Image 1: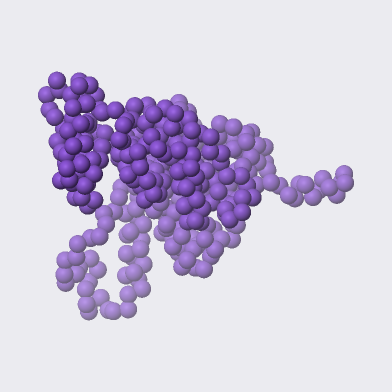
Image 2 (image 1 turned 180 degrees about the vertical axis):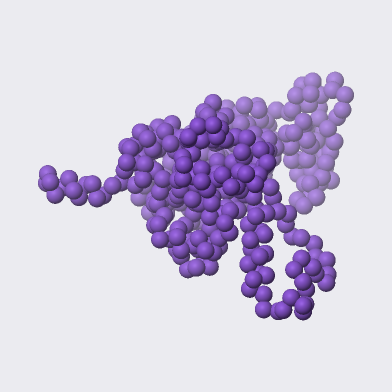
Length: 388
């Protein structure tokens, strides 16, 4: 018999009873109710009889399943000590699952329930591709449950029968294709940005890096011995065994060199503190109260708790928001840094072909590289004039 019996616990915000079997959380019903006590006793009996193995899937609800999966996801979907975007995707899909079917036994969740979740996503105005991806994540949750022996295998197989939404489905929005940023839009926001963010934009546009690769740059990760530097970037597919080496040419080197010289070998090259200092200096320059009146720079008459701590590095989100705020400040249509990757792809494709796009941007297939490279309509027109 196992030495320590899992306790009968209370989820305070929901007033639900639950039991934690080594990370697998199973809800029992209303805290203190006879039904929850009876269910707890049954589960403990099965747990003892199974020599410490969690109870059988009978009576496991969708809430139980998601609670166990969430504990797994918080560990699985991390990279470099940071949570990946997949975790927020699963949080969004979990909210829909629990709103509709938190107390439904997992054995009763089938294609009809999956379609109901999909209809909620359509009602929220999500794009078709996002909906199909989120439906796939619900299947992944149940697939995990099958592997953990808390979901009957037939449930996952039945969910695979639900086809993805096809293009043209009435009432379903399509995603706008991502286009390169017009050069004028990039130029117009530069004066509204701190120098460190300007440098990030220029480097990303020249190298075609992903935002996650750009913000993770450290001097020790860059081989600066040759005329072309090589950056050993953290790859979003490194768990599949793919390495990502970014080549950095002379123009990007000129931008990076002073930032590298001001950084330690294991420090991030692009630091939010530099952005904060620039904004503080801009506010001081715009100050109308003379310095001998009111609060002097760096001084205050009261202590205010800082609402946020300045991080050691930008994240893709903070980098994107810096650009968004600059676009709003100068009246430029919103654009996001991922579009700069398309700028790089289009330029490379025009000069060196689609295979060069695949290599430089780190794609595994030409199909993905073709997606990033804007079609050269001018070439098509020239051919039509000569041939057609």
